Length: 396
Image 1 (tube, helix red, strand yellow):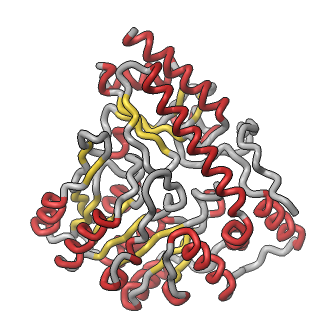
Image 2 (spheres, rainbow, N blue to C red):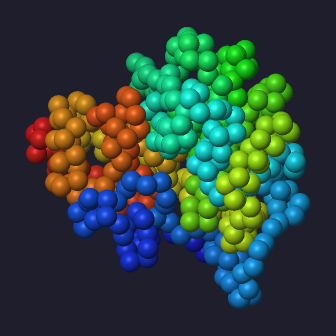
């Protein structure tokens, strides 16, 4: 049986499918006819092997409580070994309904109300939400954009923030959403050594680990043995195989005591068995979906190149940040001279585009927009043409 879903140019109608991306524009204050390139799911069908496996399970007609055994772990482990040169152990695995859930559980497990939790803004906005909503304090060591058009860490500021705020927990985004950095081994070791020196637990969100276009993804726990003892590694097939609605993540916690504390918070929240469809989708994705994944990755790589060329040639005042990882491109509109309000007006009401405004990612995000390029090229072309017209009207 061959993979069937390799036509990434095919436009699939997602309206009226209960899609958060397409069917809730008015609920979010957007025009009904807006073209959405915001939330991080893809407009591609997932692997046909996953489709078939789920269809077969549905035929059973009984949807009772479910769980998986060792073969599930072995499939996940083998993907990590094959794709990321990292070999986790079975006892490290804790399954959760999504990475954001895992972040919230970690905040509750490893800190107390009022404690400081460190992040690096601008960053995926749920990082700050799970800290604040659980009564902890957000402390940021902001990233900065260098002359190379890439974002970098300020290690001196990072350590200073830990000391000044008695930080116990750091949430790392690796690769980084939204700025598109794939952190190098050297960067992560320098950061990791600072955390170990000050006894800071590192929770590494690695959900975008399979979208690397420059450099190599480094699993934080695999860099040094001592990191294993003070870290949580969050992974999921949801971004890689477009399975967000399956609500499943594989969280690896090597340290037994940290794992117990994390599991206690899951138990306290009433989270136990996950849905069988997500478990089957994960097994199938990692065991049979690699052909689809590799083809999709190259298609997305082409889309990133298309956006880069389009921005450079046709969007005066707009700069695309150097892109290394994720399928979320970070565009700087500061050169257009538009205020935040004017920029929103141009993008939403003139271009009729729904992007993610940079301000939602915190300090350093103002004047930026995040655009999801995991869609058919024709959709992306239409979006960029609309953006060009809106910007030309302003800057032309």
